[in-house]
Image (spheres, rainbow, N blue to C red):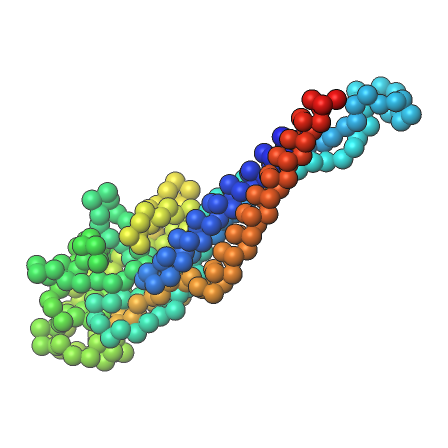
Length: 282
């Protein structure tokens, strides 16, 4: 009888974790570069039931260590196995701001934080008064050769992440991007954005503020191949890949599953109460 209560309780705990994951996705539906999470569950091993105090009608073959006939299998509950991130491409939103950058395809921008190098898909960048390119949290954005120093409104970034700067240029970035910076006089290559990828992105760890941290399972970062599947889009931002309608429907399903497990516990508790009370009367 108590086993049924434990099984229902394990189901409630799992649904509670799934609800937290979905609620976090819904809260970040407007967060630039956010990637939704998915919960994976697994069942505990099934319990094999046998009938004790058998009347001897059913006999096992001679030499069998199990003399009690099999009744069947009983589930022993469920647990949360893992929560992993779905790195599906988010929609691009055009802003026209040259400091906004988006990635299409796999890859991450690299930024320097007080805890070390971290990775993000949020390309909301800005320039400090000292000319340093930073993210919206003030973390310096890294190039292949280190920190990136620019002049205000006087640079463009092509699809391969190469940053060009021209003392006489402060105009339309699409003109320079289309020519890949080759036909402009007095144009110099400042650096190239450090866009990295991992052997297994599934095991990257979210750190908050749109940042990811490499783990032993994800493997070390390596430079992504730019210009093919992975490209940099200046003047765009990548939206969250959370579908609010789908997430809301899923949230309702999880809530109903939670209530179903709750009713199961209530029924098991009521049956246990009746058994105890009737046994006392007898």
